[in-house]
Length: 222
Image (tube, rainbow, N blue to C red):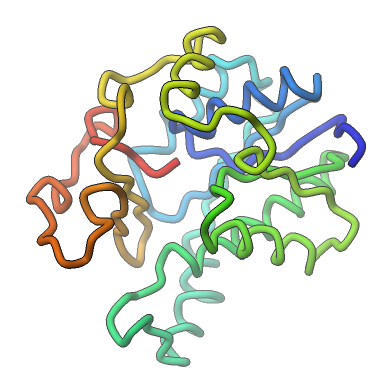
């Protein structure tokens, strides 16, 4: 795999994707373009723009795109018509959004002359497959970078150390192991993490709480 010169990153503004942004710059010496999809998560969007600017991304390289109508029309409604519910209950709101995000990653890469796209999905779950197969379906020649499968930042401690060494702001709730991660969009809110790993345990009350300030949340989806 040749080193990319320009990468479009699926960027949430959270700690993990902020670390990925800086890691791409330091690892490859490449130009980074950020893409944040407005899927209805609301208050997370402007902080993502400010964080990208803080990390040295040029304003012209920051893309925050309102894809809410496209999301509902082309992804959510067809999924409902197919009655696609995981185990008859789960709305698949997170997974159905990933191909849409990849669509715009590939589009922006073509428009700005980027030779690669990157995502923050871990190397153990289905999200990496959703991102990457969608990207390859749209452009079989695109290079997809998955830092979680490449880097040596294999623990929360190493992530925090990298953030501190590179002047990446760390919210106080991000230190230590975060209790859970939340992904929100127009369709649903999905929570996962340590407190929810055992389905035999009842979810603690804080899982159901939403906050007006994403920095105050136990852990916003990265």
